[in-house]
Length: 368
Image (cartoon, rainbow, N blue to C red; front, top):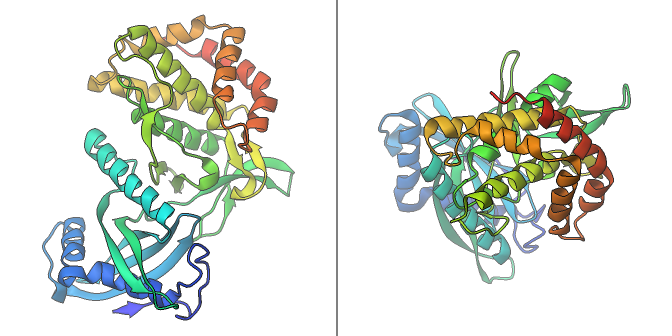
């Protein structure tokens, strides 16, 4: 086994546990995957390769640290077995708050993958807690979740192109270099992201994946010369945002209206280059949001899970709303936000223009 790591005595980026070294971190990762004679790892690799393997078939295991976050740290595990390399991700929580959130995410992802059987969220395989002794000789623990590595997928963020001072989407392709993409490619990304969130929306009990944010890199994209494919890397919560009675069909329609309006607004929010000031995506991306939303509803309708009459009826309902109606509903959404949230002033400042753009897109959208 090869452990690729930094200086084992370096406390590096573990700001949530200053007495944790990379030595502790990598040894804990090794202990996690080797538990019970590597049985969970062997079972997972066998499923990925669609054939049974044994420990003797594994030639090498590479462990790398990949990313450090406020709540979690991400490592990658490369397993080389029978001349085939299979890569996985391990999310590691060290603080008590991080562990609480990671346990909850594990549960949410399990539920969503089981309930919907869609290919847009990562597969999760197993979790476990690993104990270690800190530099102060106290017993500590890390919670680890072993899940799918999304090979070839990269973060993307709004960025200002210095060549022409225009705001564009930049894909953080760590393999081939960061690159700006065309407006049409960006529209397709926003379309697919909107479709994904709508597919996981439950029209019966109003549950949805939320919170999510482009600034957090929650969506990732894989691009080649012909295809664009977007995935959502996690789901932190799956709950209704607005409490309605499930027995009233009118409430089910209005809950979907509010979901759509919130989606149209939040899909435009990001941070410049992922870490800078709050950014607001250009108007033409709204068309992509609309297309993705209704593409998902029509998928639900064909699958028999829509449950609200016909999608055409919902389009007609949206067309009945005036700009004043939209403003009233958007204000209700903004008023429900945490007033201290940095994106609220940006939403307020851009609201009037957003309403005009969305209204025009709704009115122009075909009913059939």
